[in-house]
Image 1 (cartoon, helix red, strand yellow):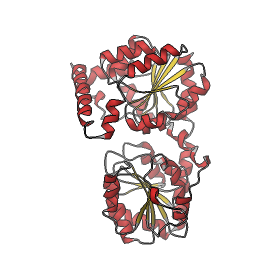
Image 2: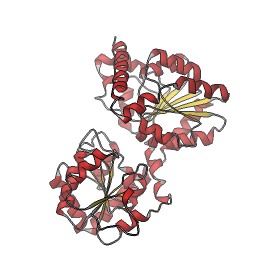
Image 3: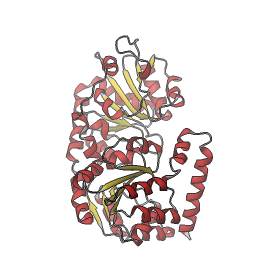
Length: 414
């Protein structure tokens, strides 16, 4: 019965997305991207008779998390073709640029018919899902065809719905997975308590992705010109309107500070949610001239794909999302040896909890707390540098999950 409700809910979600496509560019991409997807998959299979590996990510964050494994798979098994799929447009837009993927597609909505058709056409040697994008009909079909499927960098909490007494039908499908490669021991213990024993603690592959960033060459004259001088530079990444309220109030009160703002959504509404509150001069990256920049307190990056590289210019970093559903990737700032600050909704992110305990990260609940933390960074250079060193060490010490995962996967592929 619960699977029936699930199936109806999936159909309603897809219908709502198509209605929203009339008004939302993002929803339109979501719906239009799935048109003709089975024809595209059929073409891939008919033209390439090599065995396939199916690699699925929900969105851009999961793609970044799974990318080290994706590249290792391609390097280790060059005779296999990799079909990379996404649920959301943000992930798809980046995935099509990845040379490790031989075919990039949107995943059709999760239904019995779609799952049967997809698995029948693709017939992968292995299916890899990143973190926790659980599509129960696809999982069921993979199991029925005896195709191994695994979850990489998975993390579990006791309040997730499939651990509830009324959701045993979903839990029974989880038990069909070939393996869960989880981030931490608490996830492993929770799964074992619910009868899932094919679990290996491998760590979080995001560390392997971000640890490469400092060594990646990057130079930008506009950003470098803006960052010159003795003033501290705050890089605020993946920010939302709730974050903008605190950040604008800080800049208004502290004219000596500079800020590079990278909104999570690069659109007029998101940018104006900051500029309407900020009394200091701000300039858009797209309108800046590196030779003749007007004096500005804020540089707003209105281009996607630059965030992870820009954190290197920070004195300290602010990571957005902590006043909404949850913080974005704090590791991208920490890997450069920068202290990281974020909002109060961080407790489901193990790396944030641990980095706060170590002293490399700081959570704030309002503008007053943000002012206090930022003031301490300015007043005590040694404190800032020490916190940054803790952040950098934390990232390097937790790298290596990709090799641990690949060691496990080789048994399934062979």
